[in-house]
Amino acid sequence: MKSAKTIYPIARTHGLRPHLLEPEDFVRLLRTKNMVEMVDLLMKTEYASELSEIPTEEVDADHLERIFYQTLSDRFAFLLMITGGKIKEALEEYYRRIEVENIKRILRAKHGKEDISESQLLPYQRKYQKANLQAMLKTGTVTEAISLLKETIYSAVAERIDLYEKYSSPLVLEAHLDKSYYSSLWKHLRKLVDNERVKELVGTEIDLKNILYVLSFKFMKMERELPEAIIDIRYKLPRDLSQIIIAADFGAVPEILMWPSYVQLARKTIALFEEKKLVEAEQAFYQYLCSFSESLMLENPNNLVYVFAYLQLCVREQRNLVALAVGKQLRMEEGKIQSLLFL
Amino acid sequence: MAFVEGTTATRGALIRLKDTLEFIRRGRDILKMKRDRLAEEMKKFLDQMTRREKANKKLLRAYGDLQSALAAHGHDEVSSFAISVSKMDIEVLPISLMGVVVPKMSVKERPRASSIQSLSLRQVADELQGSIAELLEVTHIEMSIERIAYELMMTNRKVNALEKVIIPAYEKHIRYIENLLFDEDLEEFARIKYINAVADRKKT
Image 1: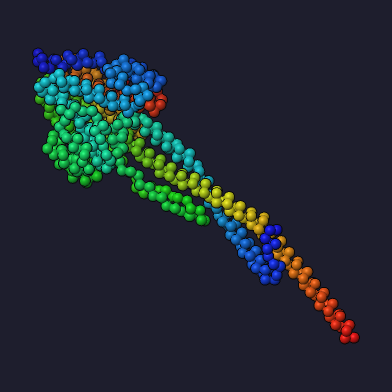
Image 2: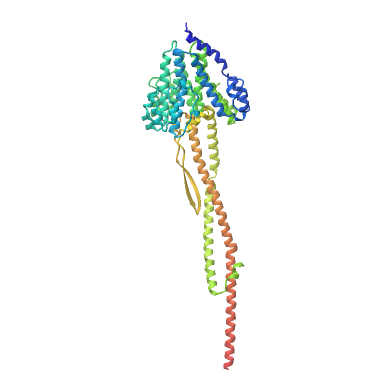
């Protein structure tokens, strides 16, 4: 018997799920002639209130992108508002991925010696902030920005400034941010009651991220830097993954990945890498995660994984809408936009 | 002949005119050599014009990939990665081809796209960098052709002006003075002959 604290967010998520756009809605949006027509269609959805504030002549992909990100952040925040206890803590950790992305954006700007303002960050509710992003925005260098993370949950990243100086690339810091984020999220997921399915979803996400890192680094012949980038958590992947991969051939990678579905995915990705279809290769990973989230939702309607999978689908919706808005603005062919959608 | 009228028909003027004509002829030969050399250079650059089409194709492919990457990642994320990449450092060197100055642009330092986490965005960044480097080469070729063509036209005009106007004018002027001096000599000779004949007659 599940507690009311667990059942309540699941029940509310069941109510929220029908508000998400369905694949046929994306196809209808895809068939629109231009962005104005697309916005007209979106006026019949949850985005109507935000969209109605933009004058028609100011409608562009930038504006729409901000609205889609804002809606995504609001959806995360709404679930945080209605939950409590350990579930709220776990969801807060899950939501922190937006803050991590914002820290990465600040570090990239500082590395490129460019100014960055709060408007260039993703919408994230301040009450959940673990780092002082506003202070980080005002710093001049990566070292200064990183030093502000010392007293926060990201202190482990702050200690790796030597790596940044060694490689002169914010990529290593980004990898450590991911590592620290997923480690913390994993720790919080362990505290949940009946957490197996949720761990399956997040564990698969981590595994997929690691496989993508492995294949990317292998493709770029940067295997030596791989141990620095790979996330420490393995869900269904071998423990000593990075050591095995460094020694192996690019084509032999699928055989190293033991979980059958990963093998199929890796084979498909390697083929796409070899055809230099890198966007499609990256999309394949996210498509896999979306399909997996949907199947978990179907199979476990009364499990907490339903809430996490719903959030994954919210991200999918945001990514699809961004692809549609940018595609329409750039007057891309319908087929090309469709290939970028996760349906 | 405008400049004939101002000059005096003396032996000194004739020598000066002949020297000038010789100088002009040498100038014309040098200009002809310059013209031939410029034509050679022009041909060399014209042969390279096929690179324009290749550069266009490369740029279009990069642009197509950029569109896909923008749609897949969103403008926000792509911009965030873009600001982490250092700017391209381009060196402009003036190169002289037979006195025709053409700026030669080359990439001194390529931006380091290694700060980009996404492989597809890194590929787009590399493709765009390659296209820009190629476009700089094509720009140099096209600018060289344009400047050489202009210089070729000017040189040709100068050679034509020398060959068809100035040199014939000088030659005509020299001939005129020579004729005049010959007439004067003849007159002088006739006068001396006449004086000698008169003196002989008086003696006898």
